[in-house]
Amino acid sequence: MTQPNITASDCDVLRGAFVKAVIEKNIPEDRWRDEAALLIRHYTDSDDVDPNLLEWIIRTGTI
Image (cartoon, rainbow, N blue to C red; front, top):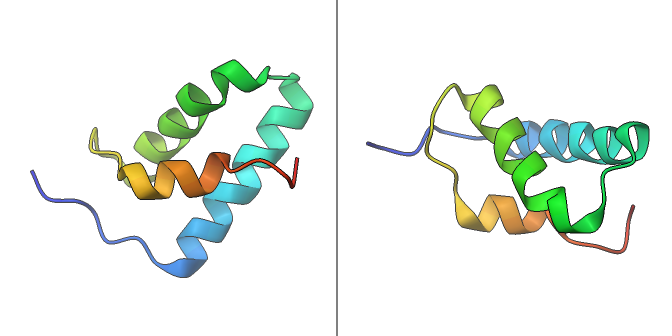
Protein backbone atom coordinates (compact mmCIF):
# COMPACT_ATOMS: atom_id res chain seq x y z
CA MET A 1 0.00 0.00 0.00
CA THR A 2 1.31 3.48 -0.82
CA GLN A 3 1.68 6.33 1.63
CA PRO A 4 -0.98 9.03 1.28
CA ASN A 5 0.26 12.42 0.13
CA ILE A 6 0.56 14.70 3.12
CA THR A 7 1.30 18.39 2.66
CA ALA A 8 3.15 20.71 5.01
CA SER A 9 -0.22 22.20 5.96
CA ASP A 10 -1.51 18.72 6.79
CA CYS A 11 1.51 18.21 9.05
CA ASP A 12 0.77 21.45 10.87
CA VAL A 13 -2.88 20.44 11.33
CA LEU A 14 -1.87 17.05 12.69
CA ARG A 15 0.71 18.53 15.05
CA GLY A 16 -1.81 21.09 16.33
CA ALA A 17 -4.45 18.43 16.88
CA PHE A 18 -1.91 16.27 18.69
CA VAL A 19 -0.80 19.05 21.02
CA LYS A 20 -4.41 19.97 21.76
CA ALA A 21 -5.33 16.33 22.49
CA VAL A 22 -2.34 15.85 24.79
CA ILE A 23 -3.21 18.95 26.78
CA GLU A 24 -6.98 18.49 26.91
CA LYS A 25 -6.91 14.75 27.63
CA ASN A 26 -3.82 15.00 29.84
CA ILE A 27 -2.20 12.15 27.89
CA PRO A 28 1.01 10.91 29.50
CA GLU A 29 4.16 10.99 27.39
CA ASP A 30 4.38 7.19 27.18
CA ARG A 31 1.08 7.20 25.21
CA TRP A 32 1.95 10.04 22.81
CA ARG A 33 3.11 7.72 20.01
CA ASP A 34 -0.18 5.80 20.03
CA GLU A 35 -2.23 9.02 20.07
CA ALA A 36 -0.25 10.52 17.20
CA ALA A 37 -0.51 7.33 15.14
CA LEU A 38 -4.26 7.27 15.70
CA LEU A 39 -4.57 10.90 14.55
CA ILE A 40 -2.53 10.18 11.42
CA ARG A 41 -4.64 7.11 10.58
CA HIS A 42 -7.89 9.04 10.99
CA TYR A 43 -6.65 12.07 9.06
CA THR A 44 -5.29 10.06 6.12
CA ASP A 45 -7.92 7.30 6.24
CA SER A 46 -5.05 4.83 5.92
CA ASP A 47 -3.42 2.28 8.19
CA ASP A 48 0.01 3.35 6.91
CA VAL A 49 1.82 5.72 9.26
CA ASP A 50 4.99 7.44 8.07
CA PRO A 51 7.49 6.92 10.92
CA ASN A 52 9.20 10.26 10.17
CA LEU A 53 5.90 12.12 10.43
CA LEU A 54 5.08 10.27 13.63
CA GLU A 55 8.42 11.25 15.19
CA TRP A 56 8.01 14.88 14.09
CA ILE A 57 4.55 15.09 15.63
CA ILE A 58 5.58 13.70 19.03
CA ARG A 59 8.86 15.60 19.27
CA THR A 60 9.02 17.06 22.77
CA GLY A 61 9.82 20.59 23.75
CA THR A 62 6.67 22.36 22.58
CA ILE A 63 4.02 20.71 24.76
